[in-house]
Length: 422
Ligand code: EPU
Image (cartoon, rainbow, N blue to C red; front, top):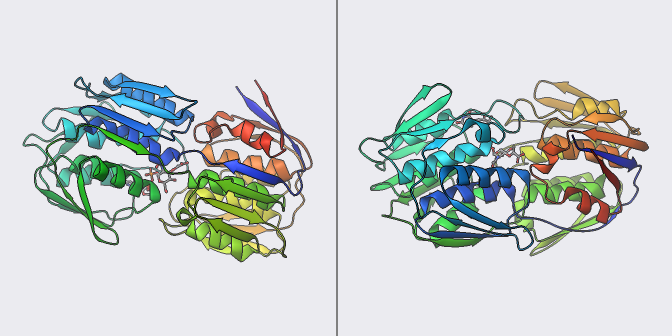
């Protein structure tokens, strides 16, 4: 199993990082290809494990997929009919596999679609009850059989209305995809407006779908007869951008991230400014500088445009290095603090009270042998190791490679001493 060995402390890290396409945009866009009868071309595709797993999943369903890693271009052809069983071995390693439910249902509404549930990152309990309730509003029944959910809309999918009880990102994408080819129009309320969901809506609309905003979190989808082909450039990954800005933040350095729209990170950039970092933005880049005195912050996560839950584990190690007490409340998942025991083993002082963390800052961090347990936890521990004195080992680095493209080369380019060991 691959491990990273990182030598610290790294001080005042300076440099520029080219941000990859957003994983959480790419995965639903790949799933959306099932809606199309001909070729879909995706550009700026990130080379991360989850994308390769989704590729395997599409191939298992019968799509023809070509991916040029160097050109970052993927083409997906769906000339044949799909198989309608989404296998457990693929969904079990990547939760986003459930995103194939909506488009399969849209393409083959009166055939039985069997999808395995579960898997992937474990920042907490991740149900699909609202996805299924959304499909039901279109006329699709569901029942659980041998660990698989069977979906069937005997009379086809018929538009009506559905309101999500709480905001769900993949739930929104799944229901949008299911509604795209339905009869009549479907109104969906309380949707996620994460940049990745908007990216999906833009792609579908540019390829012949009819999706309109009728309120800040409400859309009306008028079903179209078919979608033939489409082409789309994936937006930059806001979580990756924030992660590298935090390499600059924790080392009190200066980092520029390019190929990222700063408007995707409103609360995150506001938080960094509040701490005292200097943030300068351009249309497609963000620069962080450390010049002033830094102070602790209190933040709460929430659906976009609030502070992203994925950025919470990344900010925590930064706050361990800032004098004073910071408080963080997580409102989305039940288990977002998995990096905390590892950071405390490095000498941090972080206390957890259910979904609340109190960070007593300006602790000196020392190296430790750590084990990563999910995607964002990996980067959190990497940040700790970058700031810590001595050589830290981070095992189960594969969690990080699920979502960070070229992780080791990008860190090395910034001058971080990082070695891979198998
Ligand atoms: N929820 C339900 N029922 C549902 C759907 C969601 O109870 O049917 C609950 C979840 O249990 C959770 C909350 O609603 O407590 C929000 O979950 P959401 O559905 O929004 O999360 P997700 O769509 O499964 C996506 C990202 C995550 C990101 C979250 C929150 C993708 C592929 N994944 O997950 O990304 O943390 O939204 O923004 O888009 C990551 O990239 O590391 C990652 C975990």
